Amino acid sequence: MVMKILWCYLAILLTVSFGIVQGSNNVTYDGRSLIIDGNHRILFSGSIHYPRSTPEFDFSGRRDLVRFIKEIQKKGLYVTLRIGPFIESEWTYGGLPLWLSHIPGIVFRTDNEPFKINTCNGKRCGRTFKGPNSPNKPSLWTEDWTSFYQAFGEEPPHRSVEDIAFHVALFVAKNGSYVNYYMYHGGTNFDRTASAFVTTAYYDESPLDEYGLVSQPLWGHLKKLHAAIKSCSKTLLHETQTTFSLGKKQEVRTKNNTRVRKSRLNFSSSEKWKMYEEAIPNYDNTSLKANTLLNQISTTNDTSDYLWYTLSLLASSSVQSVLSVLSRGHVLHAFVNGVLVGSAHGSKKNPDFDLESNITFISGINKISLLSATVGMPNSGAYLERKVAGLHGVKINGTNLTNQSWGYQVGLLGEKLQIYTDIRSKKVQWNSLGSTTKPLTWYQATFDAPKGHNPVALNLGSMGKGEAWINGQSIGRYWVSFHTPSGIPSQQWYHIPRSLLKRSGNLLVLFEEETGNPLGITLDTVHIRSTIKRHG
Ligand SMILES: *[C@@H]1O[C@H](CO)[C@@H](O)[C@H](O)[C@H]1NC(C)=O
Ligand SMILES: *[C@@H]1O[C@H](CO)[C@@H](O)[C@H](O)[C@H]1NC(C)=O
Ligand SMILES: *[C@@H]1O[C@H](CO)[C@@H](O)[C@H](O)[C@H]1NC(C)=O
Ligand SMILES: *[C@@H]1O[C@H](CO)[C@@H](O)[C@H](O)[C@H]1NC(C)=O
Ligand SMILES: *[C@@H]1O[C@H](CO)[C@@H](O)[C@H](O)[C@H]1NC(C)=O
Ligand SMILES: *[C@@H]1O[C@H](CO)[C@@H](O)[C@H](O)[C@H]1NC(C)=O
Ligand SMILES: *[C@@H]1O[C@H](CO)[C@@H](O)[C@H](O)[C@H]1NC(C)=O
Ligand SMILES: *[C@@H]1O[C@H](CO)[C@@H](O)[C@H](O)[C@H]1NC(C)=O
Ligand SMILES: *[C@@H]1O[C@H](CO)[C@@H](O)[C@H](O)[C@H]1NC(C)=O
Ligand SMILES: *[C@@H]1O[C@H](CO)[C@@H](O)[C@H](O)[C@H]1NC(C)=O
Image 1: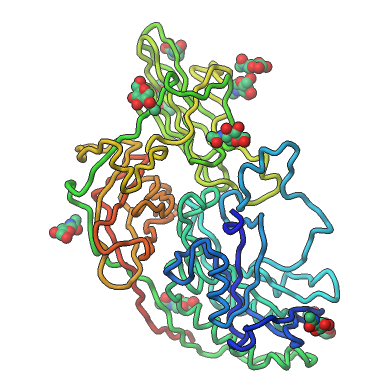
Image 2: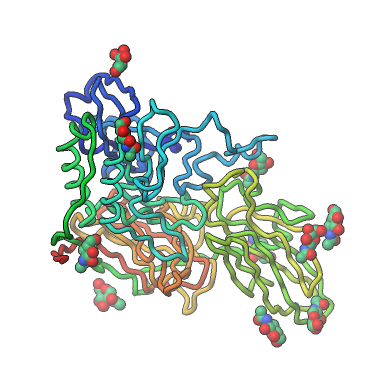
C-alpha cells in the first residue's frame, strides 16, 4: 500500500551526468532556485506514475519503488518524490486506503495554514502565480498540465504545444526555476485504480503517450525549448533582466506525427468465444440485510464496483407499476424477476441520477434486483470520508420503499470466483455463444500475440461497459457506450502491455454489463506516422 501511494517525478534534461548523481548530493534552496552541491539550477522534470506502466516496459516492478528509483539513477537523472498518503492523481480515493474512512472522528483534507507549501499547479503559471510565500523560497511550477485526464462521456482534452512552450518560457523569464510536466509520460489505469469516471487511458496526450510513443511536435518542441533555456541558464540565474520587444512572427516548420492502428486479429468467429452468465441474486439468497438503503462506498469498501440491492414484493395480481430509483452514483441496471427493466447512469460532473421504468408485476412474489455500480472512488475535494454512492430512494407507484428489508450482495459471483484467471475460469461451466447477447455476461477467448514490437491495443468499439482481463491481469474498465457530446466513445482502444502477453494462447476475459457484441472486437497494433507541416 505504501508503495502504491508514492509518486515520483523524474528530473529530465538540464540536470546532470552519471558522475554527479552517484554518491550523495547536497540539495538546498534559496529565493532564486534549488541548489545542488552549491550550484543554482533551473530544473525541468516530467511526471510518470510508475504503477501506470508495466515493469518490462520502461521501469522495473510496477509497484517496486526501490527498483524504479535505481533505474532513474542509472539514467543519470534526479527524482523529486511527492510523498503520500494522499496523491489525488485520478487514483481511486486519491490513494488513501478506504478503511481510513471507518476510523471514528477522522477528517480528511481540511484547510490547514501551517501545512501549506505554495507552488503553482495549472496551465498558465507564468501569468497566474503570485510568487512564493517567502523571499527565501524559489518559484516552482509543480504541475504544468500538458493536457488533462479524460472522463467517460467528456470530450478529449487538448493543449497546443505553442501554449505549453510559451507559458514555460514566460515562467522562467519571471524567475521560475523549476517546471514539472504533469504528465510527461501517460499511462494505463489498470484494474480498478481509476478514480470516479476517469478513463482507462491516462494523459494519453502527453509528450510520451500511454504506450510510451513519442508525440510530435510536442516532444521535440519541448526538447528544443529546454536546450535553449539550458544554454542561457547561467545568465538567467545570475544576471539582472531587461525587457525589449520583438518583431513580426517567424515561419516555423513542425514535424507532427499521428497514431495509426492496424487491425491484426479479429474475434468475429463465434467458435472463438465461450460465455458465462452472471447470476442475478434475489432477496432470499443475499446474506447481508438492512432496513434501509445503504451507502455503497462504506458497504463495499471499494472491494468491487458492484453492489446488489434486492427486495421481494408480493402482488395479488398481474399489474403495471412505475419503478423509480434515485441514485447518488454512478450506474444502475434494474431487474424485475430476472429481466432487465432499465439502466441509467450519472456523469463526472453530476454523478446523481434517477431511473424511472414501467414494470409489470406477476401475481405472487416479485423479485426486484438493482445492480448499482461505481466507476472509481472520488479522488479530490475536501472531506473524502463523507462521500457517498449508490441508491438513496426507491419507490413503486409512489410508495417509498426505503425502509423495507433490503438484501445486499457485494460484488459479482464471477469476481468472487476470479473466473478471469486461467485456472479459476475452469471452476464454472462456460457455454458456447448464443444468438442473442444478454446483459451481465462474461466472455472468454484465447489469442496469439501479434508479431513485432509495436504496442498492442484491444478495440472494444462493439462493446458496452465492463472490465477486461488479459491472462488474469485486469487492463481496466471499459465504457464504450458512454459517448462524448460529439457522439463518439470517450475511449475505444484499451492498452495491452506486451509484457502481459505470451507468444500464444493468451486468455482474454471480459465482463460485459450491457449487450455489447464480442464478435466485433479486434486486436490492433499502434504505429506512428510522421508528417511535416509549414506554418506561415
Ligand atoms: C549543503 O550546502 C549548504 C549550502 O549550500 C551548506 O550550508 C551545508 O553545510 C551543506 N551540507 C552538507 C552536508 O554538505
Ligand atoms: C525576479 O527577481 C529579481 C531579483 O530578485 C527581481 O528584481 C524581479 O522583480 C523578479 N521578477 C519577477 C517577475 O518577479
Ligand atoms: C502539427 O502540429 C501543429 C502544432 O501543434 C498544429 O498546429 C498543426 O495543425 C499540426 N498539423 C497536422 C497536420 O496535424
Ligand atoms: C477475420 O479474420 C479472418 C482470418 O484471420 C478473415 O478471414 C476474416 O475476413 C476477418 N473478418 C473480419 C470481419 O474482419
Ligand atoms: C439466487 O437464486 C436465483 C434463483 O432463485 C439463482 O438464479 C441465483 O443463481 C442465486 N444466486 C446466488 C448468488 O446464489
Ligand atoms: C467494510 O468495512 C467495514 C468497517 O471496517 C466492515 O464492517 C465491513 O464488513 C467491510 N465490508 C466489506 C464488504 O469488506
Ligand atoms: C400502480 O398504478 C397503476 C396505475 O394507477 C395501477 O394500475 C397499478 O395497479 C398500481 N400498481 C400497484 C402495485 O399498486
Ligand atoms: C410509462 O407508461 C406511461 C403510460 O403508458 C407512459 O406515458 C410513460 O412515458 C412510460 N414511462 C416510461 C419511463 O417508459
Ligand atoms: C423515503 O423515505 C426515506 C426514509 O424515511 C427518506 O429519507 C426519503 O427522503 C424518502 N424519499 C422520498 C422521495 O420521499
Ligand atoms: C423510515 O424510518 C424512519 C425511522 O426509522 C422514520 O423516521 C421514517 O418516517 C420512515 N420512512 C418511511 C417512508 O416510512
